[in-house]
Image 1 (spheres, one colour):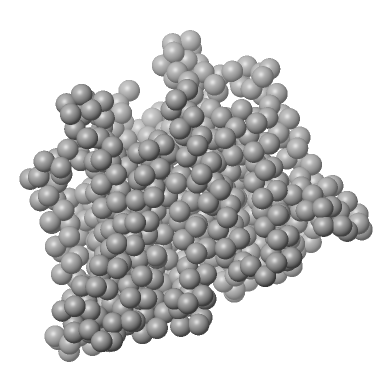
Image 2: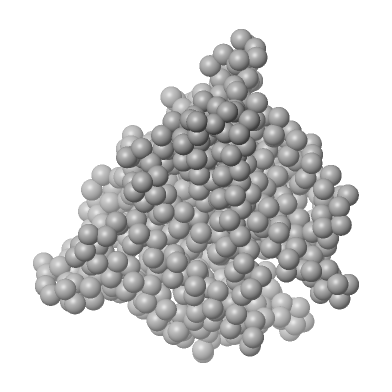
Length: 284
Length: 337
């Protein structure tokens, strides 16, 4: 494959977790709940995907258990914040700590290792590598999910309610909307969305590895800031992050730069973007 | 069915923690009761165990104080982790180059390096917050990841010992172990840095109560507009709070590098920053509260290590996250409906 094609294919491959996390962040934040536990949700859903696939030998079961785990994990955040009235940031941090530790704990218990699961069965894929990337079921599901989330906020009553609850909870309550319920539904839904990314990471690599989420759940928050919580713009920004990621790998192969320096670049870029987006929001 | 009565919330929180403990231990094929007694015996039952708890509590109390000072100003410093690791690197790098200096010069220099680097790393987030309005939770998380990427780079290119660690810190720059004072603690990692752990929260508390800047710190968080109207330099206070928080994270690193290991190695301080957040939240920023929380969390960590053979030690970290969550639910956020 030519370098440009490789870069394009890698961008498509990597956009899945970014877009999934960004969609999840849009849904929770538009419902008025801060969620910085997306990284943890990626880890937990990836772990569940691996465990499900390893125990049954079926990628589909793995995929399904990943979705269930991600949904439960984020619903836990929703419960703690909405019902338990915990601070959303504290709850997110606690859930991240739990997720990272749980992954290591589970790896040690199940496979007596501290770093990665054994090789897992994936979905049947076309023999062409590029085609396999583009037709990965989790990726296709994420594309569908992006359209659905866009439709949710544009046309459905639930989407309208999520926005109402996020913008003005008291006014929403006065209108007879069950604010807590809408927020719980939104957080649970966000978990299912992140899980698409977590499952994709695992099924794409055919294994679960400690650190494989690679901070994408955090970086996606920068995409949401740039996209100002709008679905289309945020998805574009998330794909931009993936393109940066893919470029980093391409450059690393071509030049003899220290890999750590390139690993640092997305974070520097994200910091700048966050600052610029914050100033724009302040002026507006 | 939102829980309202405080004791009901506390009971639910405690039940969640206990249930998680049982599940984690049980899943590993161990009896919870035996695990509990063995964990207690290994952490608080021997002089060595107590020494290890003291060592861990030293870091935790200072890190907890670091979190608290920013939290008092309404800032959430999730970046302790990165500030700590960079500061630990700095004290290792500087400490290793102080072979020529007498102790009264070497020790302060190594400590100053850690404090300065920790503060500087936090100051980036503080500046982004004050000048741009960028939320410190997001920026400090990104800065943590950035530090993770930069440290191996620094170690591999010039600052390290050609691998994953720095050279050995000059003896003059180390903090004496407690075991040099009493034989009972022989082999334990606890050092005189424990004095810092007792003094830091107390001095910070005094500063926050007695000085003008310290008192304003507690006001700019909840009511920035009122402060601005009253002529309080809000931006400057916020900047100072977060930077000071990072500097204290740097101080935390000293107990580990200068008091125990005698060098910095990759991943050495991993987890201490997040544990510090928990201690800060548990201790509610009060000096005795911070010390008690640090001892509790330290004992929990030590017990986890003791049990590692039968129950993976990561179980304590899971439990630990659940404790943070449970405390957040029991403490509830303040905006009442």
